[in-house]
View 1: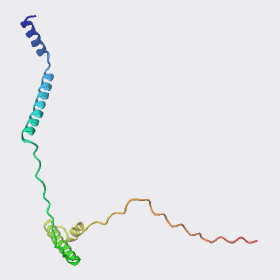
View 2 (view 1 turned 90 degrees about the vertical axis):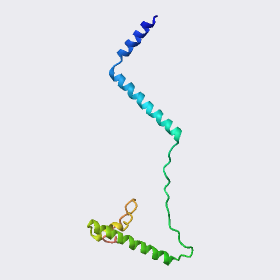
View 3 (view 1 turned 135 degrees about the vertical axis):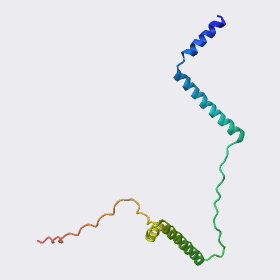
View 4 (view 1 turned 135 degrees about the horizontal axis):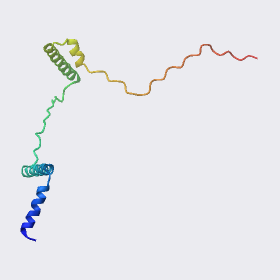
Amino acid sequence: MSEESFFKRVRARIAAIERKQWIIGGLSLTMTTIIMYTFLIENRFGYMKPDPIIAYFKNWDDGRSRDEALAQQEEEERLMQEQAEAVAAQLDIAAEEAESAAAPAEPAAPPGPPEPAEPAAPAEPPEPASE
């Protein structure tokens, strides 16, 4: 077998490949290259973790009484109500609607079987049997 015949056969095979097959082959090589490149980048630089979210909370004094806690809670509720009213005024919404939206909804009753109705009382008591 000569080199010329080998190259002629290879050339004939390549010429027989359809355009659709070339496109699919090119896309598969491109996707494979992208995936391998992504793994290379991740291996070289490591996984970038997102910045942690720091949640701050308020510390209170050890000697805080219940009355002080309730007063603080009422003050915070008053401030929230004022903010809701300010937003409502900006958005041209009635204060009552804002107040009803800010108020917590009552919890719904848990689903369950309906309560049984009371039995109806007999219209007349039965008469005693007499002999």
